[in-house]
Structures are given as structure tokens and as C-alpha cells.
Image (cartoon, rainbow, N blue to C red; front, side):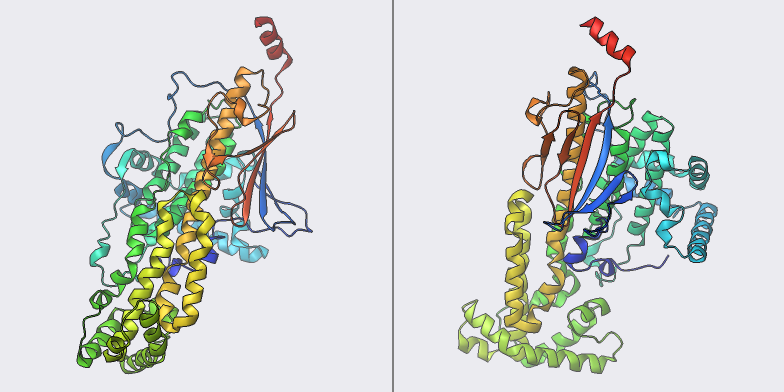
Length: 529
């Protein structure tokens, strides 16, 4: 597997808004089916709508109420580092024969795809990931999973651990952009294997096993949320997306107990991005440490000559190319000439910005060497634009999203005025809002699951009937992060439609029906009444 730096995975916000979303269906085409989902496009809004038809079975609240949990509570969690167990589960510390078999299996899959003229996701094992439990060729899938039969014991142990720490020591890293995250990418494959195990357990009516695996999936997501980088958080969200599909299949099984309190007891947010966001807020100064020296203190031209040399040594090839300085393959002298030219071109806009926006005296600015004016403008602009994005992370998403476009607009306006001086901010900041949107989407998925379970609880007390409104539920309807309100619920007698608020590019719709009760069961219930 090719190793890539974390920065190679961090692309503009427009990508992350759609990175883990389904491919949109064309408005004039019939809905696309993927597993239990139908995808269509709303012609008015252009939003892709994912619809799942769900057949539910009434289930009362468990006794005791917290009998079923997906994650251990704080008392039950064990000290220790879950990362060690995950590394064992992916075979980093042993299991070379299994890794070799898997590699050969996927190579054969690629060859089959080429021979059949198909994309890789259209042939097994990738084709299995989106199938519903009843669609899976169980014998083939179980044979495939035997190659990683060593994984479940490690994953069960990892789920019990309180923390996940890869000991990355980012503060001291010389090239943060170039940091390799091959371990995080393998976690995504680990989540896919877990999803297959969960679906096989559902298909075989091993509900206890399916519940345990589902909890381990959410534990993996939570643990990735403790890692240093936002890309780890995003992979964790992608892993929880697989768990979300599996949970929707699981709650439709007639033997699945009511999981309202199991979902309610999950941490909110499940993936807490505060640490990764805090690191991201300091990222420019972690990568280009020399920028920490930039302030209003007058320094001679000789200092700035040395400053440029030190800056060049800290600029990764990825960073240099993305701030429109393509010197990745240039010799040091050429790279320095490009940088000097960029600084000279940026001087007029930087000078105007410091005087007009930050109130520095014209005489003071004009006395500075050219490089000091430009780099002082860079750090002042970056700090200001950075906090225009990060301040909204301290509010609930349904408040923050109303202002999410303001930061983008501010950045575009300043980019026109400052030119190259705005490049670091333009490169690093726009993805922040998309990460928060992805986190909110995960919160909405959990709210949908919790509300479905509340509806199953209502049905258990009302002869298998749907509630006329969410106000009739015996327990509170979960609030979703896009509105801070309960989900949209439309009652139609024999069925109901539970929908999430439209998020950028996507909306979930669950069409709910209760299974018809056998005549004998209905007669017994009537006689008891």
C-alpha cells in the first residue's frame, strides 16, 4: 500500500462536503439502489435523497433499561492504549501470512475487475460492503473473513480501552505536512471487515454478536476522534457511516431488543474533534516554525535573508505547490529566487493591509524591510481569518451553520486584496467547516437511530401502531444537530416518514412500517385485554 502524508488527504472543503456522500443520481433517471438504500435527486433543491424502507417490530424498553450498551461506561472502561490492539488487528505486529493472503485476494479482485470491464467496487469483496445482510453470499463472505479470524479478539479488547494514542509527538515534528498516516487508512479497511462481520451475524440471527460488533465499530470511530489530525476524525466518521448502515439493518430484525438507551448513552459528539481542531488552529506555526518570530519588532535586512533560508527549509513540497510556488523539483537557488519574487510582488497589498486594516503607521511600515512587511501581513491575516472559521466551533452546529458562509466570504475578499499573502489561509482553512458538517451528519444519523427505537418502544405499548407524532413517544425524541430540533416526522397511518434536515448535498429518509402481527399473536393480545 502506498504511503501518503496526511496532507495529501486534506483537500479543499468542497471535496470533504462530498467525500463520504453517495454519488448523486440524475433527476431524470430512476432511483439508484445500493443495498437497502434508494438514491434519487430532488429536482427543486438538487439534494440527493437516500431513502430506506424499514419494517419494524415493536420492542419495549429493556429491563433493566441499560441492559444493552454499545460502549462500556466510564467505570467499565479499562486504562490502556487501544492503538496497540488495533495495530495487532490489522496485522502490523504479526500475522504476516494473513496480510499476504489478503494482499493476494485483493490483487485477484483487481484482475477480475479488469477482465470483466468493471470498477473495483463492483466485484467482491468491495461489492459486498454496500449489500444488505440478506443479499450477502454468506458462504463466500465467511470464507473471506476466515483470513482475518485473528481480528475479533483484538477488536473486543480495543473497545474496552479508554484512550487511543499513536504517540505522534506532533509538536516536535519537523515536517507535519509530510507526516505519514498509513495506519489511519488501514483503519478504514478494518471497519469494512467489521461491517461484513456484523451483517453476517444479522443474517444468521446472532443478535448478541451483532450488537457486540456494532459497539466495536462505534468504539473504533470514537478512538479515531482522539487522534491528532482532522483526517483521522474524518476516517472515524466514515467508519461510523458503515456502522450506521449496519445498525439500520439490525434494528429491523425481530429479535433485536430495543436500543433507545443504548444509542442515547453514546457520547455526544461521538467523535470529539476539539483536540484535532486545536492542533489545526496552530498548524501553520507547527509547519513553518520560523513564522513564530514574526512581529512588529524592527529587524535588519540581514535577518530577513536568513529568515527566507530557514523558511525554505521548512516548506514541504506539498505546501509549496499549494500556495502557488511550484518549486518541488527546483534546486535551492531557483526555489529561493521564486520565493523572493513572490515576496516582492506581495509587498504593495501587504503594506496597504497593515496600514488600513491594522492601523500601523505608514512611516513604521515603510521603514520595515520588504520581507518583514509581507510576512507580518501573512501572520496577521492568517490569525484573523483562522479565528473567523474556528470561533464557530464553540457553538452548536445549528447556530454555527447560519454563519458558515461568512468566513468563506471574508477569505475571498481578503484574497483579492492581499494576493499571495493570503495563500496560507486560503490553503489551510476552508476544510474546517466541512469537518464540522461531517461531524453533524454523524450526530444526525445517531438521532435517526434513537428515534426509530423510540418508535419501536411506542409500538410495543400500542398494538404495533405508529405514533401520530413524535410528541406521543414515551421517551424524548432525539434532537438533531442541523436544527437543534427533533427530526421531521410525517404520519400516514400505515406508514410514517422520518427524515433528517437537509444537509449540504444529502438528505436521509426512513419510511417506517410495523410488521403485521400473526393472527394468533393478535388474538392472544386481544384476549389479554
